[in-house]
Image (cartoon, rainbow, N blue to C red; front, side, top):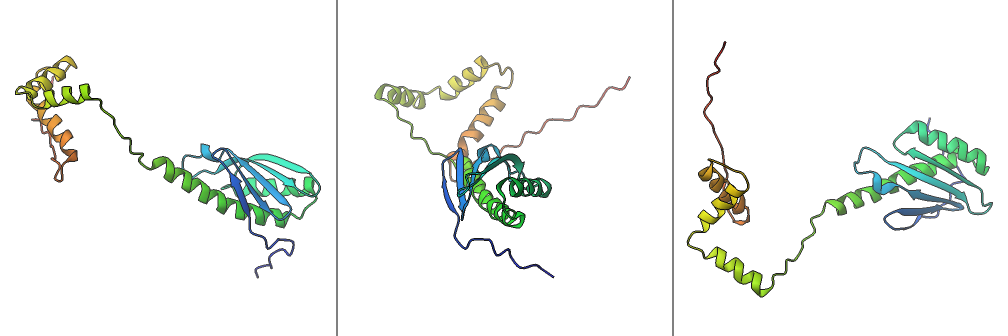
Length: 190
């Protein structure tokens, strides 16, 4: 049989106020300040610093815990209930709602971090003229090959140029694919 939800749970929605480094969630008279959420770079961990304050009495409990660990959540709820003179079930329910809210915040932060940020390149007239001069050069491939040689690629002039052309074709509607195949030499057993 599933027990009824604790009657002490407030019906009020949680309020989130935060920036990148700190989030505050309030459930009735219980305020939770969350730090360290931005350090969780994987969806498999949710380790953070949690400060719980009872806004009426001013009592606080603070700990560092992984919200995905049931043992750590239970320990936090037990200790906070003792220190703040609250029911443990109420704090456990808060931690469940807190976990869901933190998952949402973490997913938003990870999505924003992984989103490509387009950067506009500004080129002055001298740089533009030099680039066009290089592009229109009759010996463009020779100049690119010389750059490869100065970078230390020796004896692979044709392969380096083919690889370069395949790499820059990524901007085309139909980019080139490149397969490098080398002959397998027999091993000389001794």
